[in-house]
Length: 158
Image 1 (tube, rainbow, N blue to C red):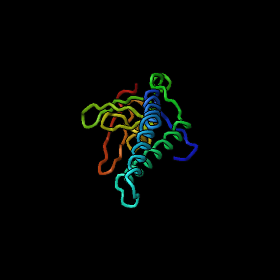
Image 2 (image 1 turned 90 degrees about the vertical axis):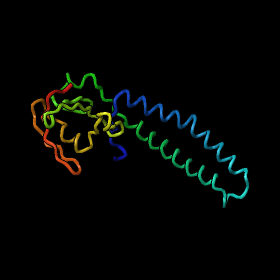
Image 3 (image 1 turned 30 degrees about the horizontal axis):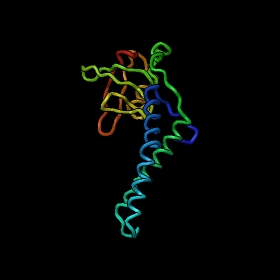
Image 4 (image 1 turned 180 degrees about the vertical axis):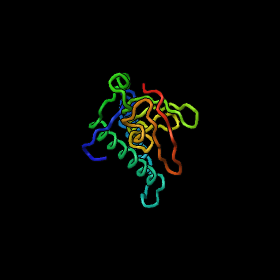
């Protein structure tokens, strides 16, 4: 993702990103500073596994904080409620019902940061999401995923 590329998220997704950011800044960052101070108080840092582990954890926390800061600066809110009325085509925020092998399946197309395939939230950047974007009710699509190609028919867009 380029540094200027918009990050599409729903309002719910934005709230979760902000909540994670606040938790890391207000809870995890101070906690790890205390853990480092405690480990440092045990003397020689060259052979101090607790210190090394805490510094490693601090790097992960700080990296995630920076990543969230970059994302939050580039957020583009996707209004799921207006998705179906604004367009008859599948777009980010659409909930799509498809038929695959005679079975109905329902998916919501979301930005990559909100993707949770097991919960039916499919990234717009995934092969699955890309195959559905821009399509309309009645379209038949081939969804190419690693190891399998599926034929699907779009039944509903909400």
